[in-house]
Structures are given as C-alpha cells and as structure tokens.
Image 1 (cartoon, rainbow, N blue to C red):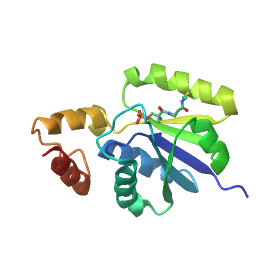
Image 2 (image 1 turned 90 degrees about the vertical axis):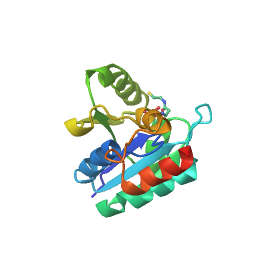
Image 3 (image 1 turned 120 degrees about the vertical axis):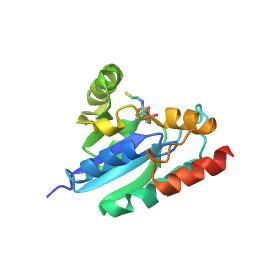
Image 4 (image 1 turned 90 degrees about the horizontal axis):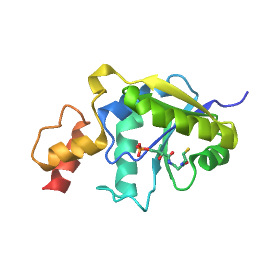
Length: 159
Ligand code: PNS
C-alpha cells in the first residue's frame, strides 16, 4: 500500500501556534506529514534555516508522524522527490484564498499535486509570523501565540 504523505510548506520565521494547529490536524489525516521550511535567499529572515528547523522539530515532536525538511526551488519538485501526494495549507480568511487558489491550480497543472485547505482555528485567524515579529519588535506580548520556547528565542533575538 502506498504511504500517504502530505507536506505543510512555509517560511516558519518563526513557527506559530497557527502553523502547529494546521500541522497537527494534517498529521491525523495522513500516514506521514512533512513540514518543509522554504530556503528563500531573496527574503531576509529573522531566524536561519537551521534555527527554524530546530524550532519545528522540537514543537512538532508530539505528533509522532511528522518529519521536518527544507527546500528551495519549486515545491512540486520537492513533492516529486519525496513521493508526496498532497500540499496542505491553512486558510485564515477569504483574503488568503485568491493567492492560495492560484498556487494550488499552478501546482496541479505543473505536477498534478493536490492542495488541501484546512480552515484555520478562529483563535488564530489573525495570526502571521510577520505580525508576531512586528509586535514583538516593539515590546508587545505575543507569548499566547507561540510555543513557549519559540517565544523565548524571539524575545532573545529582538533584544
Ligand atoms: O509561509 P509562506 O512564506 O507564506 O510560504 C509560502 C510558500 C513557501 C508555501 C510558497 O512561497 C511556495 O510554495 N514557495 C516555493 C516556490 C514555488 O513552488 N513557487 C510556485 C508556487 S505555485
């Protein structure tokens, strides 16, 4: 029987409780979940790829069937190389939908990879890594939105 594998791709700079909600829910639907951090040389990130991977490994260990990896280039090439059949994305609001639909259609036309959307838990519908970083930069408390260890690293990094 084929192993059903899904990827949750993203920048994860840093991983938030919103990401973890989607990763945990996706992990229950598939035999194996792969969380893939994008290595994007064009986009400056607060945390290095290694730091992001370490944070993801620590915070997803509880799910049991989740592996962490990183990729650059096209997501569909990563999926083909790893035998991944589906991309899982969280949808926070209608505003996410246009671009996500476009990417889902492009990825299907490129490699017949399916994209599945999971509605974000409303607790996290306003949450994004960039907003968390902005709020934390100016001293705002984002501890309810991140795993404790990630919040500690973020506060340290911005100090
Ligand atoms: O967390 P992000 O930055 O919103 O994640 C975006 C990501 C990594 C999912 C998206 O940019 C992506 O898939 N990039 C890989 C490059 C690619 O395949 N581009 C074509 C998309 S149709």
